[in-house]
Image (cartoon, rainbow, N blue to C red; front, side, top):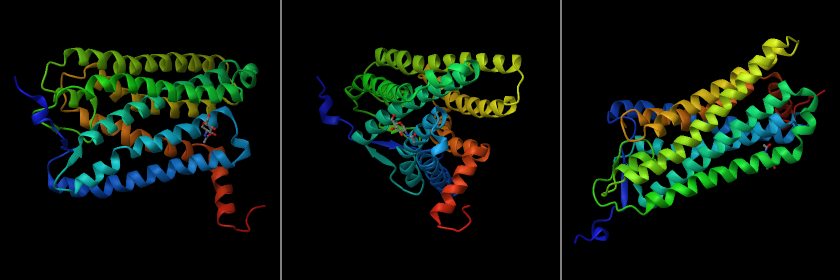
Length: 312
Ligand SMILES: *[C@@H]1O[C@H](CO)[C@@H](O)[C@H](O)[C@H]1NC(C)=O
């Protein structure tokens, strides 16, 4: 009998987006700038929501929390990926690899449920405006945030034990920018059919069902807007467009990766860029550049911060 422990893999190699050194040197400054902008932008949203009294509405409460999650989603793997661009030995420890998997699914799960919560918030605001304040009270908002973290924890916690206990004895090359379930599972040296089923059932279903709920609620909202033409219509529509853009860019890649997780991996790493790099930077862009309330609040905050006398 072979002893698996003797040849147990102690670290993995992350290949990254490309093997071309030239492109890697070009990507290094690009991703570094995107990362810094993502963290600062989301931090600015969190601080603005916290310190502006008239942004104490359910929508901004959830947005503040979404920004916090985006900040962490952008940080759990990207700094290492950026460092690896200029490193010769692109290794990650066994524990580091599984920490990335755990965080990806925890934060991804939280983000999905938060996006559903934000859609629900918009649904109530637009389809049941008279009951908005009673339905979306403070308690419900806190409950929605807690539910999202609990779902993320459950979603991530359930699948990790299936994979971390697999025997890894052979190849240790992960062809992506961070460790994720399909690619790492493929490296195990036993048949992983059952584990693959678990991953599709869990990650695939949570992505698909959240996406379906989102589609239904946004459809209901759009129908309502169409039938009741009012003055707030264009504002509502631009908020919705922002939400729907984020939703499609986040869920599209997730569904693609986890519904067909073991067929073709060559595009997975490019899709991974969408939900760890593109989506987290979208929030600050969409909500600050397109939102007058947010812009005004940030300007006020800025003048208080620099202590200027322009505040009137
Ligand atoms: C996010 O949610 C927590 C807990 O519900 C809340 O205390 C916090 O104020 C929220 N954050 C923002 C920025 O709104």
